[in-house]
Every structure is written in C-alpha cells, then in structure tokens.
Length: 123
Image 1 (tube, rainbow, N blue to C red):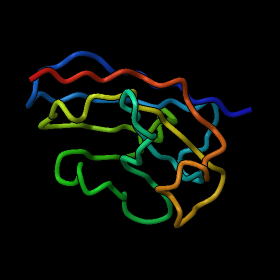
Image 2: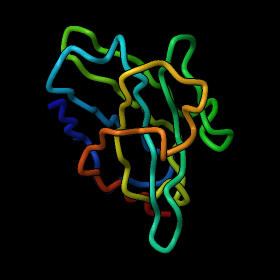
Image 3: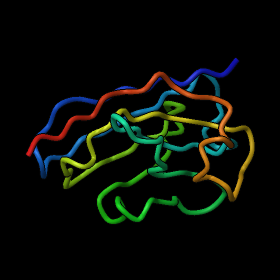
C-alpha cells in the first residue's frame, strides 16, 4: 500500500521561504496526481497545488509564491514556498490518487493522504 510522508514544516517569519517534501513509498509520483492541501484551525481543508498530467496547478492565493515539482530520484514531490504570509499558517497535507484528474482541487478525489506537517508563519 502506498504511503506518503511529509516533512519540512516549521516556524518561520513572514517573508521567509520554506520547503515541504512528500515522500512516497512507491514509484508513483510520475503516474499519480499528487497534490498539497492545507487546513487552518476552524477552517475546511483547502487546495494548494497539484501535479497531474500537465503543468502544475495552484490556488490563486499561492500563485507566484509557491512552486510544486517532482523529484523523481527520491520519489517525492516538493512544495517550495516563498514570501510566506501569516495566512499561510496551517497543517499541510500531501495527497495522491492513482490517475490523472482534472478535479485535482477536490480533496474528496484523493485516496491517499499523509499525516500532515505544521507550517506556522509569524508576523
């Protein structure tokens, strides 16, 4: 069974960068839709970015600041975050589904989830 393990979260100041990594237990990153979601306290889980069959897709709030890419050698997907804002504070989850989908922003489409990693951005 495929497992996802996130790492790289932490406490940073506004404007700082941070890199999140999602390591998969199998060679799935090139054939699965891989995505990041986040959930702040008291809020619903929110789409952040996804890799499917084409170019990376981003939520409007992170465009130009976040970059998502595959590290095939490490069976991982990387979320490079820059210019972090306090409103980016949340638990970040990696997710995967074993096909390419145009519904990549819908959390219910994903069958595999990591345990989450906390990102806290202080002002």
